[in-house]
Length: 490
Image (tube, rainbow, N blue to C red):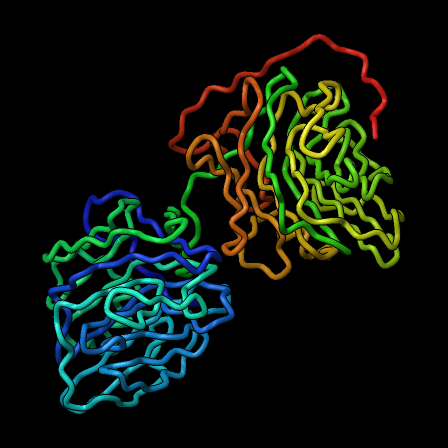
């Protein structure tokens, strides 16, 4: 695994964030002019993650006399440009995982050193004797074909994130680079000319002594995601994990419309849930204009999976007031359907072989749709409980994958992941898909709306708990009179 980066950049400066780039290929942060560019030597270092397949650009510095004055180009096969000339670095970072990238250069002999996750990977040379000119335009996330602009969408940084970016006006030793992945940065290190901690501010603030500012641009502009770092050094989301609390009113829901990344010929749905509801409550409903029960997990008292209007019972219910992990898998080729309760396979049945789930429909948590995007039935609403850690795969996942998802939630970079909602309550009204390039957003609805509630997870079993160390909460459960549940329409 990559080495562990520092716990923070700068003392007492609040939580760290990553700058997130979606698939629009328009996003960037720009500093113009950059009056403190290094001239005869430098070290550039940062954390990045991307699943982009093109020649994406993390860092571009251009002047009126040279658009490739100082450029780190193509995260699938990194090259360093100095004064229009370039050399291959022998490293890449666009495999969907977090990596620490560092590169150094000096004019005296043109020496270039490239590092991946703190390890020196290549020593080469380029542009011996060149002097980088000052006062140009620095851009993160785009490659400049002229001073300050002429971005090319094919060379944009996409489907990922950048965190903890620093530039020194000196060449760091291999030991210093390795330490750079671990040590806390104060902003006062010798030779530091740029230190970006991405604290959620726009413009982005440089914490070096120069105090530069980088306004965000693009349509939409990049967003920020809080990050923390695991013991093995891997950055992960640091937004406090939440569950969605549904009261007894039968009105709250979370809607994603349209959902453009639905699975088609295979699907796996996994989530944690807890409820004391006595009705035929619905955790997950996906409807299209062609079918209201396109992909549906229905009736938490006796769970059934619907695919293309047809259904099969999964062989268990979960409405006992305790947390349960539920997974349902399906494949079109033979209709094989499996139901897992708390990681244990409970049923294997056959459901709608040959059907293909259609894309672009309406995904709703907490309500059963009797038409595309609406016509909710109170008798089929999720009541008196919680939903947490919802994910959907475009494959029928294996028993070992079910176990893995139960014990520790997905990162968002797993192959064939169609949706990952950790329900972190980032802005109190929306939920963002963890899959970097999807840009999927769910919006809370109903009167009242669902409520975000902090949850912790047992390190061994993965089971949620409604008490989080350091977080004090009050839990309110509502009750409603028992009503007769009409047959499900559609």
